[in-house]
Amino acid sequence: MTIVLIAGLCYLAAVLLLVRGVGVATQRGFQPWHAPAFAGTALHGGYHVVAWRAAQGADLHFFAALSLVSLGMALLTLLVGARGRMAPLGVVVFPLAASALLAYANAGHSAPEDLAWQLQLHAWCALLAYATLAIAALLAMMLWLQERALRRRRIHGWLRALPPLTELESLLFRTIAVGFALLTATLLTGVVFVEDLFAQHLVHKTALSVLSWLAFGGLLLGRWRLGWRGAVAVRWTLVAMTLLVLAFFGSKFVLELVLGRS
Image (cartoon, rainbow, N blue to C red; front, top):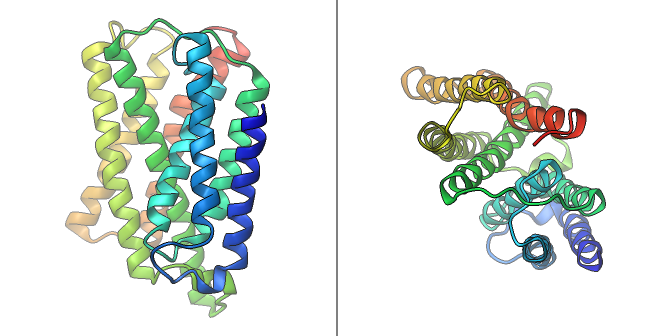
C-alpha cells in the first residue's frame, strides 16, 4: 500500500507543477513535472509487477484492467508532454491514474486466469488500444473546448497551454490512427485465438467493439477522403470511444461485479 500512496503523491505533485507552470507549457524538453510523473508511472507499474509475482500470474479483472489502462494513458501523456504544450492532458490523466491505482489496491487482487500466451497477447493489445483511444477522446474534448472558446473569443489562461488548433487536430488523428491499428490487432487476435468469440458472454462485447472499430475507421476514412475535422471529428471520436468503453469495461463491470462471473 505504501507504493500506492507514494505513486499517488507523485501524480499529485506532477499535476500541481503542471497547473503552476501552465503559462510556460510551450517549452520543449525536460520540464519540472516530468520527474514526479515518471516516478508515479514507474511506481504504478511496479505495483502491478509485485502483485502479479505474488499471485503468480497477471490479474486482468475489472479494477486491474482499469488501473492498467490508466497507466498506459499516463505513459502516453509523458510521451506527448515531452513535445510540449500538452499540460492540460496531464491534469486530467494523472488524477485518473492515481484513482484507478487506489481502487485496484483497495478492491483486492483477484486470482489470475490461466490464459495461453495467445489470449494474453489479445488482452494486452486490447489494453493498449483502450489507453491510446482514451487519450484520443481527451484530445477530442480539448479540441472542442478550444474551438468553442475561439468562436466566443474567450481565450482563458489554460487554453494558451494547448497547441495551435491545427496542431492539436493533427495530434488527435495521429493518436486515433495508432489506436485504430491496435484495435484492429485486438479484433484479429480475438478472431484467431479466442475459441468461441460469440459465446453468450462475449456477443455484446464483440458487437460493440466491431461498431467502435467501424466508427473509428469511418472517421479516418472521412478525414482522408472528405477532410473531416472540427466538430465532426469530435463527435465521431466520442461516439466510437463510448462504444469501446461499453464493450470492455461495461461488459466486465456487469459480468464480474454484478453477476460475479469471469
